[in-house]
Amino acid sequence: MSLFGVRRWPVTLRHGPITLRPLRLRDEDEWHSVRARNHAWTQPWDSTRPPEAEGPGITFAQMVATNRAEGRAGRALPWGIFWAEPGEPPRLAGQMTISGIAYGSARWAMAGYWVDSALAGRGIAPTALALATDHCFGFLGLHRMEVAIRPENSKSLRVVEKLGFRLEGLRPAFMHVDGAWRDHLVYVLHAEEVGAGGVLARLKGGAPGEVTDRS
Image 1 (cartoon, rainbow, N blue to C red):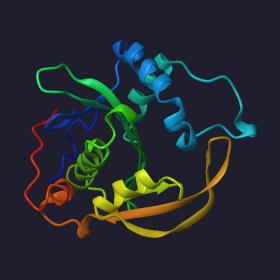
Image 2: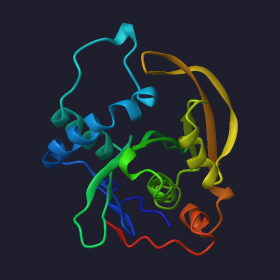
Image 3: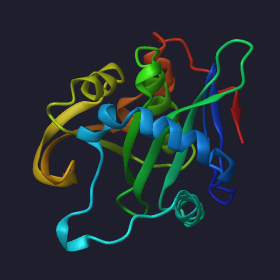
Image 4: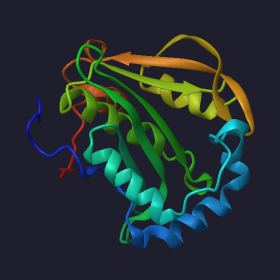
């Protein structure tokens, strides 16, 4: 199913207690709190600016505005990941960003994500990546999804392995992360490798995955 000609952004995806939606200005305090609490957890994997690109950082409001512009232009899908305990309002659990979206003859994109350490082990990252990939393959008509992961990031490697991404190779000095140019392993998945049920179905044991909201 394709949604060409239909609004591509903003879009919200939900499955069970997990929601992917654009970050909003009112999320600022919670975002800063979660990021500060997870500084040691995420720092080894966070992208950084190389010396030649040094400059002032952006504010949360600037990030939200940039995300909105990139989403509307069709170049990215920048979501916040939200998790809801039974009977509780959703809380910020991380971010899922689909970037570098290419159409035409390429039809590929790259996924990047992080999840709050306090919520690790609940299947949030695999479910979020499955939702995002199914949306890209089924609704945007993309063909290829890439995830670049530092070889030392064992937790993120387990995420892509759960979803059936396959190792394509090593890209030396691929991205500036934690203050230096770092090697990354590149995992890929092609739309024809998934099957009719989608990546979410693969994660949930073969049963068709239900997206309870796509708006």
